[in-house]
Image (cartoon, rainbow, N blue to C red; front, side, top):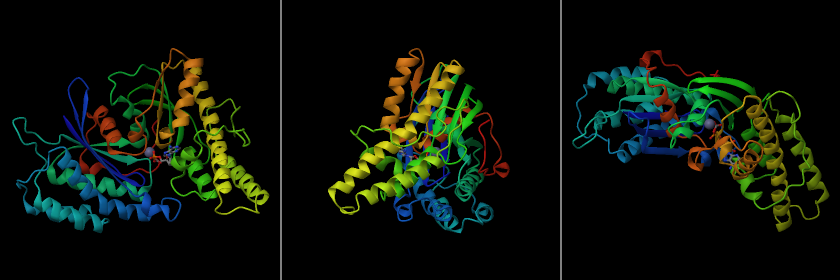
Length: 391
Ligand code: KG4
Ligand code: ZN
């Protein structure tokens, strides 16, 4: 079967096309992402209204790219134009998207593979939550429009689950129970997975997410957006001294708190700036201070993530530890987790996504869609749910 997946929960517009055979082997036919980093960089964070507008602009060209890559762009038109009126109604809140999709639907037919196999798209997978509400709705309405127009069923997908299930890309089986640490810009959760679709949230952040903490720390340091990749790059080869607090590291639960760390970062950085005021500015020494402090921030975040994840894995006798979400792109986090798991739980397998599949993308949505392929819904029933929970 072929799944077309759409992901717009935050600031990346992602569309993927995945082919799955009956044994559960996947072949990625396309995985296209339009990043909005340049748009949000100026403001040091994601503005939902702006992100929504960008998704409206990006979705149709990203879909065309994905269909082209998958060799499914169909030049033969068979669909009656009477359907356009309804598309206008479905996209009444997305005028920019409507303007872009109509010429596309007029020019190309329902996706269809050339050659002897033929066939097209069997299922549309769409992230309907959690995420930024206006962004989710653009994707949801886009999915509704093409589902209606091409008469393809829809399956709604949870974004957090997608970050976990992307680890199935090159793996037929994951040994259960598993403990998943999902760390992104909006979430930090420790999840017990007892089956695909069977999850219990054991703990989560009580305030900021780990990725948000990276982003805010980078802003305080004047480093730009998104903070995670910048901080991790600067921190390379620097040994942290452990100067920052590790909030909630010793509590008996599996919860986190990063807002206190952010405040500590603010005060500590102000102090460093004051102490070095005679040369603070554009000098090489400032860069060195930023790099050293980045290593401190990164290690403080890693320490708490690691401690609580290992604790959960031990308590629940996990056979696998799964890492997912944008922060799983962090090289130091993966390295330290790998070492710790080898030392303390040598029989536990550690899974993490390839770097390109760590941050938001359509492929993770497609894989989650595959596992829920029997839960098809009609497009009229689809809704965005910004606070959707995995359990
Ligand atoms: O999963 P994601 O793409 O979007 C959400 O669902 O939120 O995660 C984005 C987050 C951002 O906060 C970003 O700073 C962080 O992932 N991130 C990283 C790295 N790359 C991205 N954090 C730490 N180290 C990285 N290398
Ligand atoms: Zn995400």
